[in-house]
Image 1: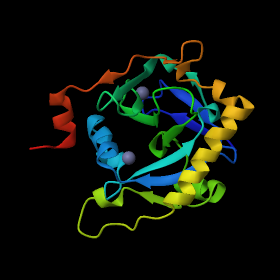
Image 2 (image 1 turned 90 degrees about the horizontal axis):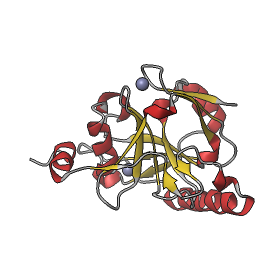
Image 3 (image 1 turned 180 degrees about the vertical axis):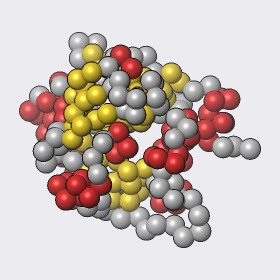
Image 4 (image 1 turned 135 degrees about the vertical axis):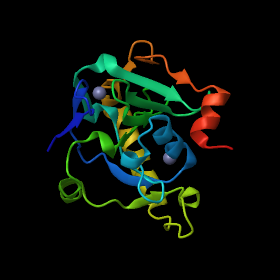
Length: 198
Ligand SMILES: [Zn+2]
Ligand SMILES: [Zn+2]
């Protein structure tokens, strides 16, 4: 089963073809919330408690078929994750490490134009809830599945390294190991704004 990736304006298109290498999670961390604010799409990306639904997988499962030139990338800080989005309409795509190996992407579910029930049915339910202490509101969700989820992700990264699939990565130039676009590191001012520090 393959899922279409489509930004809101339709310029960026691609496909997510999950194999068994996936781990679904909701991340409540302040940085994921800041990324949603950076894109000014909190309503669509974040749930009521500030959680971002993410499918952790390997980039080899993701292909872009149209409009890849619209991809842009930020880092909240010099050492932060690479946070990818379609700059044409501020659609989040996912988070990666700064290098193509270890092979990893946290695909943000918002970019998949699939209905949630279909995703639940074919990929299985979300089992991992992380960084719940940063959730918004009094009633924090319970942290769950962190150890098993983390082991799963390490397993998929190791497998991609051993079978060479890490070399399939639409977001990096494999020869140099550099991302296909230069990430913009947020300035102190920009970071303050998206972190809502007042
Ligand atoms: Zn777009
Ligand atoms: Zn997060």
